[in-house]
Length: 247
Image (tube, rainbow, N blue to C red; front, side):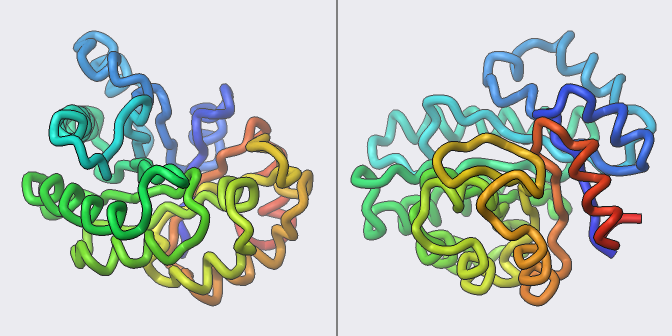
C-alpha cells in the first residue's frame, strides 16, 4: 500500500496528517540556519509525537551538491550531514534533497559524476535504514538523474519526482519522466500548475492530467510514497479519495 504524506507547504498540514493518519513532510529546515537552533529542533521533535510517518526536506538555499569548487562542495556536505543528524533527532528516516542541477551551468558530463561522488560520500556516513530522495527542480530531463541514481547504486538513494517542477522547467512530459525513472522514483511531490510557474495548485487546477500521471505512477513506480505539496492539501486529499487512491 502506498504511503501518503502532507507537506507543510500547506499551513494546515500537521492537522491534516493527524486527522487522516498520514505522514508529515517538514519544510521548516529548508532554511539551514534552523539546523543550528537546538531549541527549535527539540520543539519540532516534540510536536511530531504521535505521527508515524515523518519525512524532512533538507536545506537547499545556496547549496550545490554537484559543485566543482571543493570549498562550495564542502559547505554543501557539511549542511547535508547536519540535516541528516537533525532527521535522526526528530525521528525521521527519509530526507528529500535537491539535485542542484542548473541549466547551462552544470552540463551532464560535470553534473553526473560530481553528483555520484557527493551522494556516495554522504551515504557512507548514514545508517542503513536512512533514505535519501533526490528531487528534480530545474532539471530539464530525467536522464541525468537516472544516471546519478544508477551510478550511486545504493538502495538507500532514490528519486523524489516533483511533477510540478517537471511540468514547469522541462519540455519532457511528466509521464515520460515517470517512464524513464521507473522504480527509481521512491517519493513524489504531487501538485499541479499552469506550466508557466510553480504554483503548487490543487490536483485539478493545472495543465497536467493528474489521472494519467497517477496511472503512470501506478504502472511504473507502485511503491513510491506520495507527498501532497499543494497549498490546498485538503482539496487534494478529497480528490484522491474520490478517485479511489486514498481511503
